Image 1 (cartoon, rainbow, N blue to C red):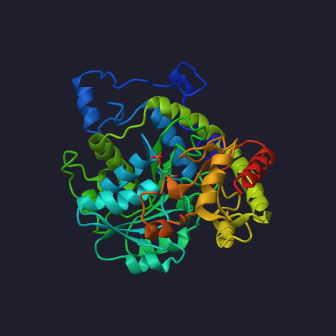
Image 2: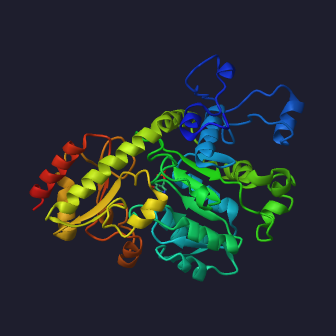
Image 3: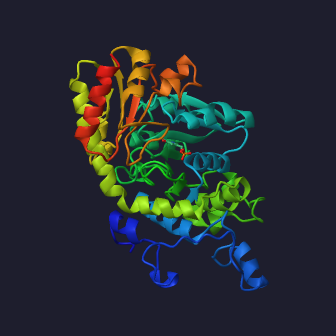
Length: 425
Ligand SMILES: *Cc1c(COP(=O)(O)O)cnc(C)c1O
């Protein structure tokens, strides 16, 4: 299987049907724990002398197959799944960092991540400098002696800015700091950040990968390409107090980070994914490639239509020639620019609310990446807790309407938008 391409891997990787009664679908192992052969076997499992399952907070056979497939399609050496994208982000940062450490992050972030970095982590002594990611040099200028992570979203939600990952990776690499990329909006079917030098890749599996709006989940994929022995990360090179003296970089090797994330992060913070949700997300991953291309096709059609409409003040979609990110999209997203569009109507905040209340096919809710089309007005909802300055730097203007384009017929979606434009006048 290791020689196959990504679509084949997404369907088959990690599942030996002989070990699951011949079941063609990946079974749901809905169990909290696993019977040990005897006390010696249990001791060996806990000491990592033998590999196997102990307790579903740490690992589970259904989750394990999902992890293997996600690592394979992103090109990493290992993965750990979580109860949500947010749990993946928080557990990753809390495994990597300690009080006194510093993060340099793009300011164009998912609202929850922005709050984690700007409000919650500072309570634990972990501060973040936010930079405008359009200029990679801004990351370099914000790095200081305490910086231990560089963080960005490959396609920012909801700003839809494409970051020049390769340029930022070179800077992070030069300073021996891992680059963490949240690749949720493009999904692994459109972009693999590891190819451009990312060290750790995160997804909210809730979005396009699960794809049907029915299950939360998250993942961290370890590229296995970061040198933890560069002197800046003693927790990986010295005997771990948290796991009876294990030296991660030495014993585990390239997958040191994801091992610590599982053995200490999942054990101590507990954000484990339910095996039932893992099953749902596996169904999504099997069709991701065909779905995301249709999401992208539909979105491009609608973005082009919006651009021609006189009631529309501006449209932001990285696949449009008018987009400031069009050149970068040719490098990073040549096969499609995903399903998210943002735009503003003449009439600003009030008309944005009115428009949002006037659509019929689109559902007003706080999610993206569903088969069904979705709509939200971030300034009054997901981003209402940010002040004006923060709303601006995260790319959320007062009039911004975010669409997550689904798999309906594009003509029906356009018709719905056209009606809502008239109604909201
Ligand atoms: C949704 C989202 C998250 C958070 O994921 P949850 O599964 O909702 O916790 C993180 N990053 C991005 C880019 C997202 O869109």
